[in-house]
Amino acid sequence: MNGNADNRRDSRFFTGDRSELQEIQSKESLQRFVRHNKKRRRLSRLSYVLIFLVLGTIFVIVCLSVFFKIEHIEVVGLTRYSAVEIINSLDIKLGESLYSVNNAVLSDLSDEFPFISSARLQRKLPDTLVIEVVEDEAAAWCELYGEYFVLSGELRILDRVSEPSLLEGQGLFELRLPEIDSAIVGRRIEFTNESDDEYVTAYLDAVIGSVLYPRITALDLRDKFDLKLICDDLYLVELADGEDLPTKLSATAGVLSQTEAFPEGTPAVIDMADPAVSSAIVSHNADISLDA
Image 1 (tube, helix red, strand yellow):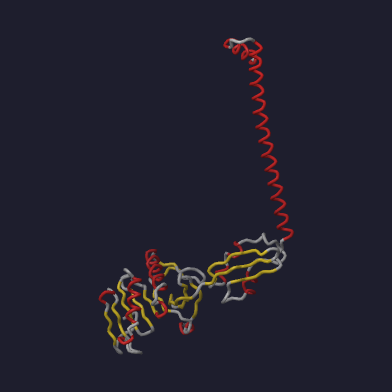
Image 2 (tube, one colour):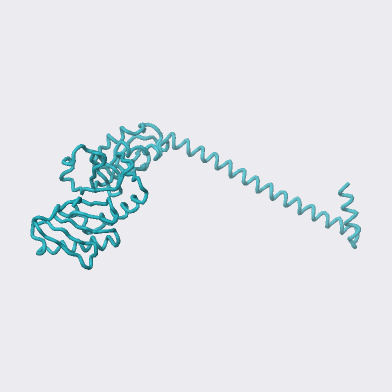
């Protein structure tokens, strides 16, 4: 019915003869047919591609699970722990697929082995699983709640001991910190005030990155406006606030390099509040204490 109406409408506005009108209508029908076939071919190709991808994925999964089994486990990057300790602590079994385990299996490793700051898995085909670990270096120790904790430069707690004498000879400096909210071995210290975390982190980074760092034996960060440190167990350095701290640390190293001004074994108190006008009192009676 609609076709007859279209024909009558076309006939009313078409000035040629009927054969020409039929030819035009045939061409339009052919074009619609061609466009329809093109769409069908595109959909058909897409279906084949999707089927191929699904089958290919299934094939790869089967190959990985069947042909690549864990026969060897290696642990690299260790200095404090043994590979056997690490492997025995993980839920990884020989004979399972290399690709059935992922980094999630390592998520709790730092809780059991605090010096490990991070770990990840690598695969060496056809049969070896490699565990790459990164260990933290101990930088300082501090007293918290009557216990003594070993800290990394990023303030992760690496160990806990009952007496500070057990830490002697390890090259650690004493660190005094503002109020702490949480101290758990294997995790970073949590401060009561977030603002304390910000300045302690910034100042500690500056200290560890300075040329003076190897000589520091104690560092007081309890008050950001009254920073103090002790070098070589002999020299108390009063830094005041942390403004331009890297310059103050470099200036302190320069002052201490003037060995003629600091007789061997003689304590000194150095005022480094303003590096441009620093001064030092060298005396056997000098009080070298962070609480002075």
